[in-house]
Length: 93
Image (cartoon, rainbow, N blue to C red; front, side, top):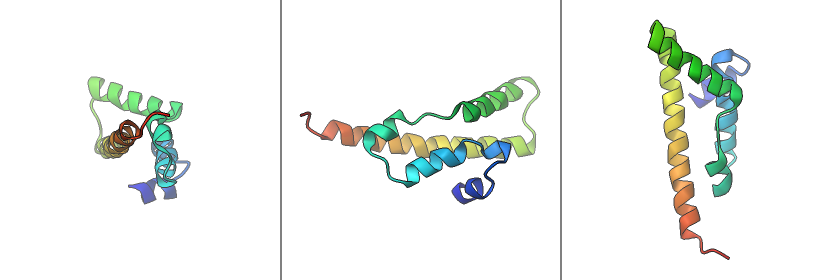
Protein backbone atom coordinates (compact mmCIF):
# COMPACT_ATOMS: atom_id res chain seq x y z
CA UNK A 1 0.00 0.00 0.00
CA UNK A 2 2.77 2.44 0.90
CA UNK A 3 4.56 2.17 -2.42
CA UNK A 4 1.27 2.48 -4.33
CA UNK A 5 0.39 5.61 -2.34
CA UNK A 6 3.81 7.11 -2.92
CA UNK A 7 3.74 6.31 -6.64
CA UNK A 8 0.23 7.73 -6.97
CA UNK A 9 1.06 11.06 -5.32
CA UNK A 10 -1.36 13.70 -6.50
CA UNK A 11 -4.24 11.31 -7.10
CA UNK A 12 -7.14 12.30 -4.85
CA UNK A 13 -7.63 8.94 -3.18
CA UNK A 14 -4.02 8.94 -1.96
CA UNK A 15 -3.85 12.55 -0.86
CA UNK A 16 -2.68 12.60 2.73
CA UNK A 17 -1.77 8.92 2.85
CA UNK A 18 1.77 9.50 1.62
CA UNK A 19 2.22 12.21 4.28
CA UNK A 20 1.35 9.74 7.03
CA UNK A 21 3.56 7.01 5.59
CA UNK A 22 6.49 9.37 5.07
CA UNK A 23 6.17 10.59 8.66
CA UNK A 24 6.27 7.03 10.00
CA UNK A 25 9.10 6.05 7.63
CA UNK A 26 11.41 8.72 8.99
CA UNK A 27 11.11 7.11 12.45
CA UNK A 28 9.80 10.09 14.40
CA UNK A 29 10.12 10.33 18.17
CA UNK A 30 7.27 9.08 20.36
CA UNK A 31 5.71 12.53 20.83
CA UNK A 32 5.53 13.08 17.07
CA UNK A 33 3.85 9.73 16.58
CA UNK A 34 1.30 10.47 19.30
CA UNK A 35 0.55 13.85 17.71
CA UNK A 36 0.04 12.34 14.24
CA UNK A 37 -3.34 13.25 12.76
CA UNK A 38 -4.77 12.97 9.25
CA UNK A 39 -4.44 16.01 7.04
CA UNK A 40 -7.64 17.99 6.43
CA UNK A 41 -7.77 16.58 2.88
CA UNK A 42 -7.40 12.99 4.08
CA UNK A 43 -10.00 13.48 6.80
CA UNK A 44 -12.40 15.02 4.26
CA UNK A 45 -11.98 12.02 1.94
CA UNK A 46 -12.59 9.58 4.80
CA UNK A 47 -15.67 11.55 5.84
CA UNK A 48 -16.94 11.51 2.25
CA UNK A 49 -16.55 7.74 2.03
CA UNK A 50 -18.32 7.29 5.36
CA UNK A 51 -21.20 9.44 4.17
CA UNK A 52 -21.39 7.65 0.84
CA UNK A 53 -21.45 4.31 2.66
CA UNK A 54 -24.35 5.53 4.83
CA UNK A 55 -26.38 6.85 1.92
CA UNK A 56 -25.79 5.06 -1.38
CA UNK A 57 -23.15 2.46 -0.56
CA UNK A 58 -19.59 2.10 -1.75
CA UNK A 59 -18.56 1.01 -5.23
CA UNK A 60 -15.93 -1.74 -5.49
CA UNK A 61 -13.26 0.93 -6.06
CA UNK A 62 -14.48 2.90 -3.05
CA UNK A 63 -14.44 -0.28 -0.97
CA UNK A 64 -10.81 -0.96 -1.92
CA UNK A 65 -9.92 2.62 -1.06
CA UNK A 66 -11.74 2.32 2.27
CA UNK A 67 -9.89 -0.90 3.07
CA UNK A 68 -6.61 0.90 2.40
CA UNK A 69 -7.56 3.62 4.86
CA UNK A 70 -8.50 1.01 7.44
CA UNK A 71 -5.10 -0.62 7.02
CA UNK A 72 -3.37 2.74 7.33
CA UNK A 73 -5.32 3.44 10.52
CA UNK A 74 -4.24 0.06 11.87
CA UNK A 75 -0.57 0.92 11.22
CA UNK A 76 -0.93 4.30 12.89
CA UNK A 77 -2.65 2.76 15.92
CA UNK A 78 0.18 0.24 16.27
CA UNK A 79 2.75 3.02 16.01
CA UNK A 80 0.88 5.09 18.60
CA UNK A 81 0.57 2.14 20.99
CA UNK A 82 4.33 1.56 20.80
CA UNK A 83 5.00 5.28 21.19
CA UNK A 84 2.76 5.50 24.25
CA UNK A 85 4.50 2.50 25.83
CA UNK A 86 7.84 4.18 25.19
CA UNK A 87 6.65 7.46 26.75
CA UNK A 88 5.29 5.66 29.81
CA UNK A 89 8.54 3.70 30.23
CA UNK A 90 10.69 6.84 30.09
CA UNK A 91 11.26 8.38 33.52
CA UNK A 92 10.10 11.98 33.89
CA UNK A 93 12.87 14.59 34.29
